[in-house]
Image (cartoon, rainbow, N blue to C red; front, top):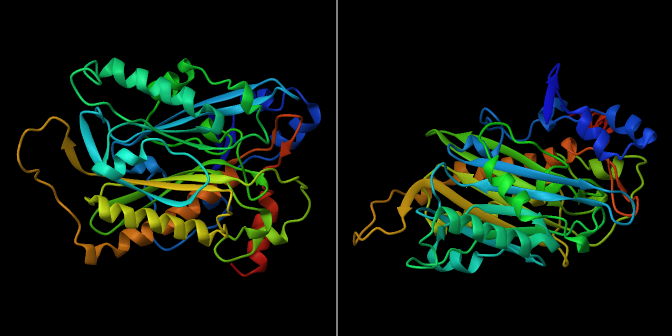
Length: 386
């Protein structure tokens, strides 16, 4: 649970104590370093205004739910979880949305994308988790969808759940596969609009980014015409020397906080908008997410799974409609540039929020991923006359 004091964001002391497994030295380090979102540090990306929550949930109807799993210490430590995105407030299987995806670098998995490419439709919630949990989450998602849609797979066509992953092996004993069916159901049941927890939560619990603690991050932008673009990422990507904040080479300037890099990492990025866009336009939106990733310095390493999904709530497509034509709207493609700008800006800030909000985490084999030092970030930005 997150609370605020004087405009600063904190995780509850209960969560912190559980997180550091009663290690007194680490308690001092973590509790003494409250985490902040990028804008709380006085750093703003781009020129467009954010939505009220500066989150994916600023797109009306979108909900986010998370289950965080922190168990044990040492060799068998589990630092993992599930983040779920419900694309609208209704039944997504019955009321589909237009969607598309872009595979920037495919050393990773996102199930269900073949169906999206074939139909241009999003028919299920979106789940983010660790690599070894994909099968468990997929199975639980199918059970959930079958329970609320008993005709699915019987008299009606089968749905293909969207489950995306990053490898959280540096901090979590992935082979123990600690996620259970009830953990997935809990994330769905607790999904809500409003503020979204960030950092070492949900699917991002065991993730690292730019050689610091990473995880879940989100941001949004608003354009003229009352359109909103929201982005949510599960950041587990890149190396420290690559990190740039608004063009400033912050990663190369940070001192200390030694971290032994593990396996090449990945990042899953989800973008949503209420602008009425068609699948081919959403494909182009997804590509602009990749531009936002590049602007924070990531170069998409060969072993990285950098996969992007974009969807629009601007048109609802009834699954069983028997009408010969759908009445749909679409933004004129020559007027789409503000949405591109919103996407690039929100992606950068979502990734950076994942970094600045993630607290130091001790995981498997006592591997430690440090939260990026916020005081150094502020100092470096000031030196560059930001």
